[in-house]
Length: 190
Length: 200
Image 1 (spheres, chains in turn blue, green):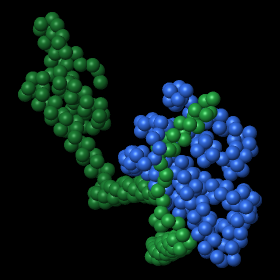
Image 2 (spheres, chains in turn brown, blue):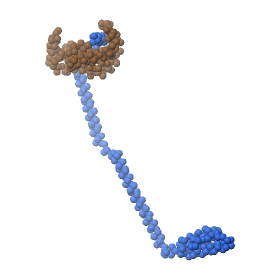
Image 3 (cartoon, chains in turn purple, green):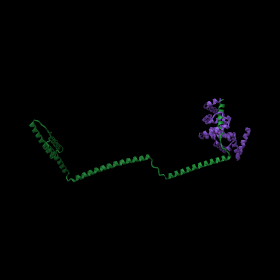
Image 4 (cartoon, chains in turn green, yellow):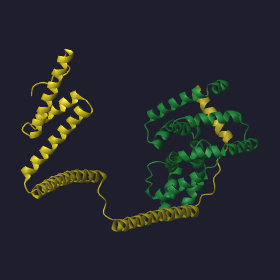
């Protein structure tokens, strides 16, 4: 499906929802919930369980969808909501990380067998996670959206309401910090 | 190239973390969640309003039943100081009045005593005469019985000095002349003078 067709379908779904068709919203959830969950999981430092966050994001979307003007893509709008929710969820996130840390590693170990064999071990994963979490929020957001979510810098700027050059500066600074923290890992990769 | 390496590392970490877990999201669950939030918010607002109302009522009741505030400590201290000054002044006045009263009573008793005497001047002369007699008597005793001529001479001179016009002063002069005469006689006998009373 082309991008234009996607936009048209999204607009149709939004219009149907405005007219009171709840199944349109279910369709939107079905289409975007995985991406929203993945983004929330990455922004919160891979806690594993993001059920509450996904619910919060779609509750906000449900309440505000009638105000959606269609200036951007629905996915970008949902990502913006997710970023805002993750910002306000910051304090809870740290506590949850401590509680779930052992469970995460066990779950990760279970996933390894089914998934493609990763190139890094658990210790390295913990180091990378700590390095990403240690980044300031403004750097962490651009790194996650650009490198993990795969958005273009222009999309990241649109989502975070930043100019493209600001996004690029933040990416450079974030990379510099990550390089300082993960220097030997990057060397091993090379 | 470090950008690619960093991106690769992050993607590998994301891969090892695996897909996130989240429950099914549907319009029904969202509506339930919204309703639950509305209930919680409404309950919280009502509870806050109830707490404020109860607190206001308690405060109003307390304000009505509360007695007027006592004066501050500073004003109390000022009042105590003023009272102390007043008490001191009153005490001084009372002491002055009592002293005057004592003086008046003493004066009255003296006047009464004086009025009880028929002839005051005669009485005074009688007392003076009596006192002079006692002094002369004591001097005689010193001179004649105890043989203390010098002390006797001093006593006679004192009588002459205190009561020069009294008849006992004449007696004292006579005694002194006798003593002087006797000492002259003694010095004639021994060729020396022991006691030479001055002329009065």
